Length: 81
Image (cartoon, rainbow, N blue to C red):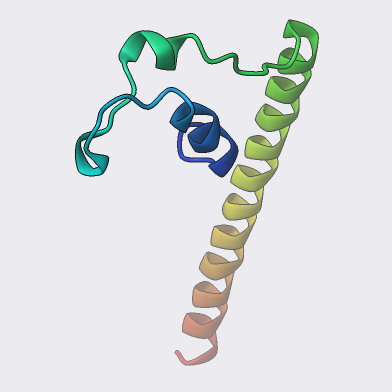
């Protein structure tokens, strides 16, 4: 996602080399020298914990939904015996 963002592309285009427009390229060394802002480890860990909680909530929601579907099927089966 980072490498396809407009900001990163514009930053990397400053390092283009070549005389023909279609053949212009950015060297791997120049690309690797572009600084990328990264949150601190503390913030990364907070994001990780929040993401795990969100995934757990989503999974629990799916389980509850499936339980309701099974209950619905059971009740409909009992209704039309």
